[in-house]
Amino acid sequence: MNQRRAKIVRETKETCISIEINLDKYFISSVSTTVGFLDHMLELFAMHSGIGFKIKAVGDTYVDEHHLVEDSGIVIGQAFKKALGDKKGIVRYGHFLLPMDEALSYVALDLSGRSCLNYEVDIRFQKSGFNYDLIQEFFYALVNNAGFTLHIKMIKGRNNHHIAESVFKAFGHALGRALLYSKSKKSVLSTKGVL
Ligand SMILES: [Mn+2]
Image (tube, rainbow, N blue to C red; front, side):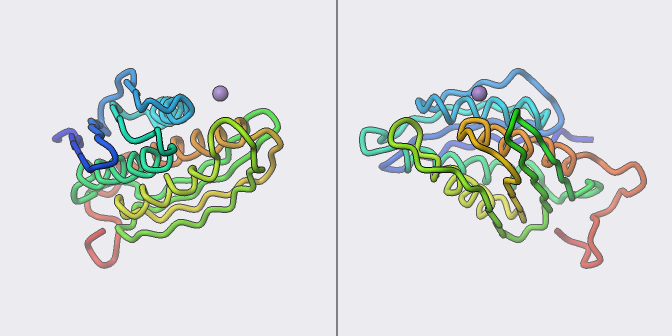
């Protein structure tokens, strides 16, 4: 079976992002986005999803980190859509409940081909450091470009860093499961016949 992989380069006046993913071959991730916190989250995601993942991003972070974080979500979404191809024989659904110290988050997803994000994460405003509102923008951009149905729910949490980690790790585990090939099914898991 051919490996499911994709390479994409996307350049706009705001950002330039190149990505390479391989859903069937794990390699130590290479993540460099110039936003340290985003690097940390994407490295966690890559490791916990078990996919091969490389991304390099630069952009107008002198404005703020919005464009770079959102555009990273766009390009990651595009890469997943391309690498997934016709989705024949895959499990399609994945979910995971993940504790990170006092934080606990639940992620459920469907590689449905339809874009839907339900994001219920209560991160408190923080004066300095990473703008945690951008996590929702990131997932919104990813889902819209990948065609994923994604539910993210924070169940508990106090520390913003822990909450974010619980979300990205849970997403990685849920996605890693949905990408697996089913032992019994070789066709697309849909009565419509396409996903
Ligand atoms: Mn950490």
